[in-house]
Amino acid sequence: MKALFKTEIGKKEILDLYDQKLEELNIDFTYLNIDTSFGKTNIIATGESTNPPIILIHGSNGCAPIALETYPNLSKSFRVYAVDVVAQPNKSEDRWLSMKDDSYGRWVNEIISSLKLEKVTLVGFSLGGLIILKTLEFDESKVKQVYLAAPAYIVNGNPLKALFKIFIPMKRFMRTQKMKHIEKFLRELFTERDEFAISYLSKVFLHFKMDFTPVPVISKSRASSIQTPITLFAAQDDILFPGIKMIKRARKIFPSLKSVQMFEASKHVQNKTQNRLIENAILTD
Image 1 (cartoon, rainbow, N blue to C red):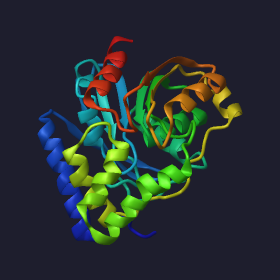
Image 2: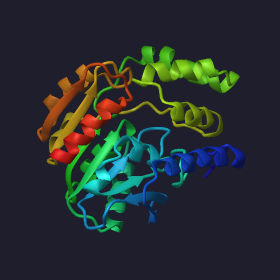
Image 3: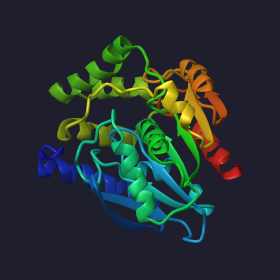
């Protein structure tokens, strides 16, 4: 198995930024390192251990500190477990998992079992949404409810738009290292400018082997088998997973869909105000 970090120097640069972001959060936390069938999984745990459990799952090319920053107040009411997704540029195993089989669902259920959690809430953004839906497909018996923000796996956007507005600027940055290309990439995906994302992704694109596999979509039959309550947040201007299309399909295929909210002025990555709305929905549910 080949390492996904291209060089040790590049890996150090990425993980140094990881540590920097975690330090900026200024929180009390514990690192948990769990053995799974898919390799070591790093988790950042914070909040009182007696609080109800909640697992945060970040998106592609992300890490646990980003998820903790996105929803900073959850630790006041929950025992928060922010997971470093395997095969992503973080501190978990750099081993690819397939989005097409049950690997992600099996992996999260192993985490839940290892942590001895019951009635756990799951929160996921983008790829994290796909991972959560895969988890429910595999075994939803220990999951209380889920919150999905601009999730993958329900619908896909126009591939030509994604090619010209996202993937070509990414490839041009990887070839030239000119920041104007990464700025263009981020303008298409981020609702508001994120300085850390610029620093982090500029390192990731150069030093990490990313998975460009087409994102699958859940079948109607699999979606109809899910019984766990789902709260869905969609983004109207999301190139990757368009909000109007997503809500329309979600209402048709998920019998357990509890509520939906459309962010009308949002690209794929929500801004701070929209993230607070998601966080408040979780806290007041």
